[in-house]
Image (tube, rainbow, N blue to C red; front, top):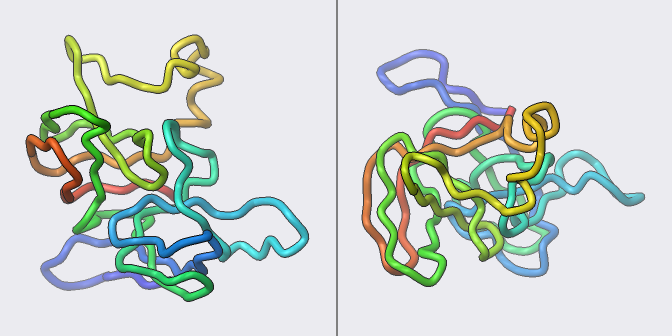
Length: 160
């Protein structure tokens, strides 16, 4: 684990992960820990599943990481690049918006309608007690952007 403790930069926590996904985990993609199977070792990771936060959400990949290679994920603090997907339409992301997993594995998006964030339909029927474990980890936008194709944004990550 790497942490920046002194200086003019905000603290952030970076943790090593091993990409065991079927393809490269690109810069800015969400990463999930593998939490089952005989070879589970607390470091093997894959791209974050599409549509909703997985309870094993680990952080944001800091660089491109090839299959079976090691890389760093930002698990706390400022991530310089969070990959955004426009999910097939033009969207505006406003500073402070919570970013949600998009329909494309590893990518994020945000949408506001009357100040209500759009989430996976399955989450809308859950009680607060049921919802908390699924959403205690998050990524929030630091700046504003309007996109109609893949883009990147700075984000605050809380995955510890």
